[in-house]
Length: 391
Image (cartoon, rainbow, N blue to C red; front, side, top):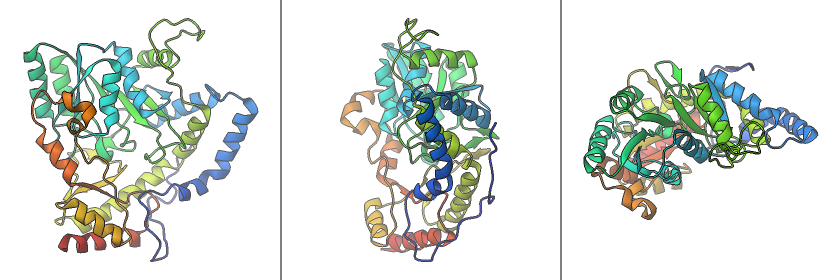
């Protein structure tokens, strides 16, 4: 296992008082690891195994060791990390998979690509995550309609906060469903001491560059608590082939993650604990400065946010966002429509209303969040936000 350094134990970096504020900062991180990355890339050029090289197995081993999962399977994207477990379970036409109605479109796409139907569930407005009470209502509605067979629940750990897996798993157990966590934004989050990746039985994550643990291109991983399930996923990612990679023993896809991306992720993992501590330190300042001014994402007892993003709710969001931009503060609006408000998924909202999803799409606003913010920059963000709210 590699050494995971806490380095400066979460102390925020010093920058000039007028340093530009960035929503994300990959360049500072790259400077810290570039020599090691170039060595890894040189090794790949030397051995020439650009697909399935030793870097893939190393990355999988380190991810499992870090999170406590039984195994990890590196794949080509976060979307593939959602599709492949559904294929491994045999989920398909006529099956229902329950997802939050406020998420990135990849969650819904993954279900549809498997052949199943995504049933949209409303969210808890405090957490932005799937509402276990509405989940039970939607399962009951699907059973009453009789056209679909409930098979799985796919919660999303939105903005870095784990979903309410204790309540979700209770519903799943009572209804005989499997749980696949979409943890793409939440690597580094915890629930009662367990890392995202080892909370649900199956967790998908993404290596998109701006994620808390990202590569320099597309990629992802599936982390599992059952090593035998990981073996099935490894077959599926190579077109469903057996050990000889020639004869297909099941239906599969090209779900491979290349050696270069795995090398990047493994190297970034050496920085991860220190970066996570600095994200938490930045969030603590936001929490203190913005408490009472805006609605903040609220963790449940025992949860720790991974702070892939720091997201608030504000009235008149577009006006506030424009004022922040004028003040030199970048922001993000990642989902300005609920899933059912997108043309491709309008047919999925057939089992009841989604008012909390629709409200979140109008009110959510993500502030700068990355490990290389200074304390002064965070206060500048808060100052500008306070002024904009008075405008």
